Length: 403
Ligand code: NAP
Ligand code: MG
Image 1 (spheres, rainbow, N blue to C red):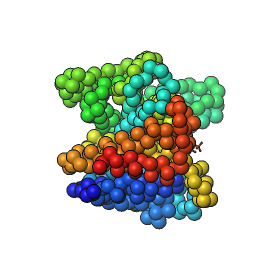
Image 2: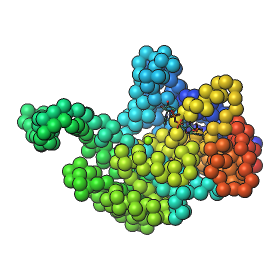
Image 3: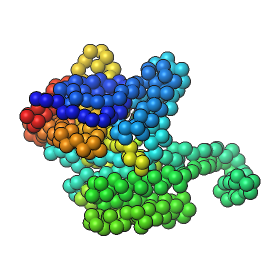
């Protein structure tokens, strides 16, 4: 069989630990035998980030702006323990944070559904896509402990020297305060990414926050979403028979649980963090979730939603076989290759990406799966495989589908 040709490279960001091991297996077994892969490779493994003073992360993000499509392996976010473990020069920042701030976007996470892995919510028939704003709020907040009686204010000093202030609280005793912010540029980018994604997927878009209580902050998000919808997307949404609506977050939560699924749910940073873990777990497993960062400038970065699966890696280092689930990482590759195909008008590459996903799910539905899925599957005959055997089973199915 001739290998599928590519015209433009995609950006490949390698990572750490167990997912780095899976990365190589996926390339060797599922990609290189079928595709004449063109990729610009960046090693975001912690050792190389340290050796390059983390310049490699910035270079990888900049390459993504040039090529528009990237696929990223899970990476370690350094903490004190990792500084010691790897003898790091510094406690490097989260690569995801660095990349997001350069590409400026929204993270979309979609459960990968398959027969035999049932959602815990009985009414859910279709995936719920989570759209999480990835900038600001509590993730970039300043906090202070208040030791005793006194007054706390928010103070804004304008560039022209004028000031404005707002009383936070007059404390009679000890307490705590927090100041957080967001930027119009980032909120507009968030809104545009959500509308563009919903339109591409032909799904309704919901946006929820707490504007009845947060009358300036959350209200600001709500007004920007409405402005972008009215001015830029209303016509296209109506033409495609899809809907945008805003509702309060508590109302949204109640509706989501009673829904059939099949929509995009946009949320502010913290709400998105919490709700996407809830929705992913309720659909079955974090390893069955695809994740893509979509920037309003037309850049796409595909990744797995989970981490580097450290506990499995230490077993692997001891020479033990692990049953780590590669599905989210496979879907990062298929997502990136499909997008590459779409941008380049490469139908063969898009077809390959579809077949890779089809083969992966077919293997699970045939009863062959990794341990995390075997523990929750409702199929009658299940065989638990180690990662390598599972990937080889997918390769056999893929070869059959492409023949
Ligand atoms: P994790 O890698 O998500 O794994 C947590 C646990 O979830 C695992 O121990 C495993 O449970 C289960 N799990 C996750 N993915 C799995 C898979 N593909 N197959 C089977 N089981 C899976 O989180 P972590 O171990 O807490 O974090 C490890 C490193 O990942 C940290 O250094 C963190 O900074 C990094 N991280 C990176 C990203 C990213 O790059 N996107 C995201 C999150 C975390 P059992 O052990 O019970 O089998
Ligand atoms: Mg989280």
